[in-house]
Length: 120
Image (tube, rainbow, N blue to C red; front, top):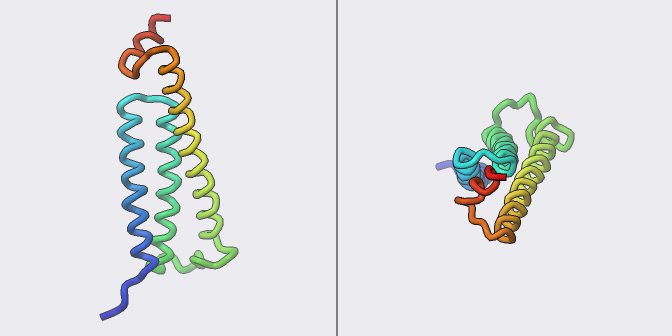
């Protein structure tokens, strides 16, 4: 029996986590369309690109891309996608926290905040 591909197992574990993050971001966007939930979903999608490139690297798909090499397209794809994903995800969370803080200072809850804002 061949030994398990440890890089693939780690990537599949990451796929589960990022998949849950994508699903929760999608549900948040469908519940209420806001900039914060849109940024969170965009960040989660960039992190899915990172996971996809690691799956391709572990399974040796698209060998012409020289997966894992220091100056390969994969290296830069990982770098840019990780930076963009984490930045957008954190920016979306920051916007959500600021919005919740404004609501709590105004004595509003999420259910009646949209009603109060529409009355202005």
